[in-house]
Image (cartoon, rainbow, N blue to C red; front, side, top):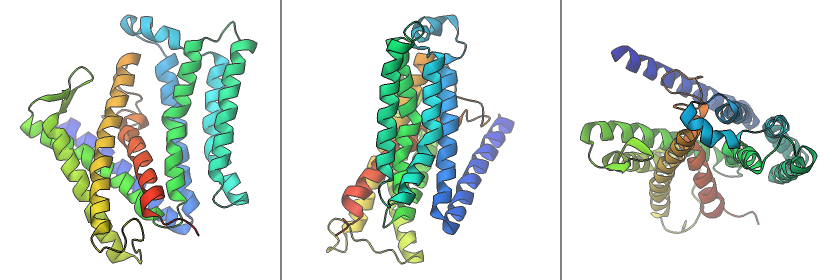
Length: 308
């Protein structure tokens, strides 16, 4: 048990080290952070494809078998992941602030291609396989678009990315620690039997505190000035970042539950084996994906002032 925990902590610290390294690279050129997002997309897509198309036990096969993607559907999903981040930066380079248009066009092309395969490759493709391909493209690649967009925010992009990668791990870590100590009623025993209500409360408190603390430290070490909603009132940013931390922590928990459902339906324990004792990349960033979406939406609507 001690060896397992030591290995788990070591792998976790190595992951944190990679994140820190990319934040340093971002100081050289903010686009270099896109390499990390690209890696998440490619590895996560591989894990999803393998979980759906790979071998399953007899219990899972009856349910998963119908979802299996054809070779042509799998090709489309991989092509989408391979092109997603490069297309964003190519369009962004040609027209600043318009990278999202490239992602929208690419997503429409994928949807049309998958529907066309139902006709041109009808002997091998099924509607269930089409749905599985769309899910695999959405989770994680399309969801990672909010991290790309956060990285390109005109104001507060660094703070936004820090919040994504601090609140989610803080909520996860404290949820595990508090739940292990206090235990109590289960949150969703049929989905994730290890999650407790006490753990969720601990994670939410930690995530909220991490958000407020991070905002305070960031304002002390940078020239960032809050200009978002209610900025005329001195207490507005503290309220905004406390609420942001609370809701992002809840989104992290929800992301964990979504992944748990996916794994149960696919009959797998972990989505991958890249990170020993942790599982795969998707096991590590499941909550972060949902945290990223929420942080970007809040920043885009309430924190970053509209361009005149």
